[in-house]
Image 1: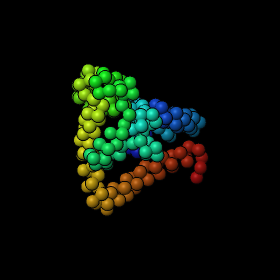
Image 2: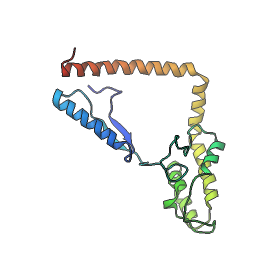
Image 3: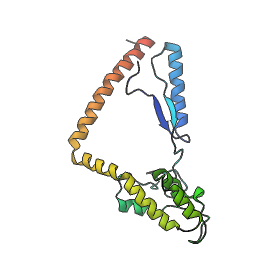
Image 4: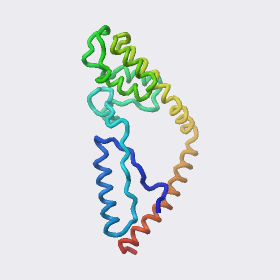
Length: 192
């Protein structure tokens, strides 16, 4: 039976997670082949961001490498992080035309502000906007984009008991579903 907490589609980034999910799918296929259908094979849903470069412009965005922007950061913290980002390495001077296709700031900006992307791209290519101006624009758009998240997070932080109740309720429901799946699997493989 299809249960709410069992996998349907699993969002993955092609570069680093798809092989793990494919391995899981193979295990599920083999189990179901040998013992009969009991497990649902998760389907891969590739994300729009196969790899998000960090603020260093070289490595994948990572808290460990400290080249990330936290979702809960204040607008000032976002601006500080964005201002350290690597931009178009081929653009040496403000008056040089830019190459948005190789600029990490533009790559991220177009995903968070798709309506602004054509204007940003044109301004960059025509050198009517510099990298510093673009970073400030992106930082503001990013801060605005995550403002509802920050507000909701503040609500949760103000009421930790509610968070614990939600977690306990979710764990109880997931446990009930898992018990059904585990019982079915045990029956299929002949375990008591």
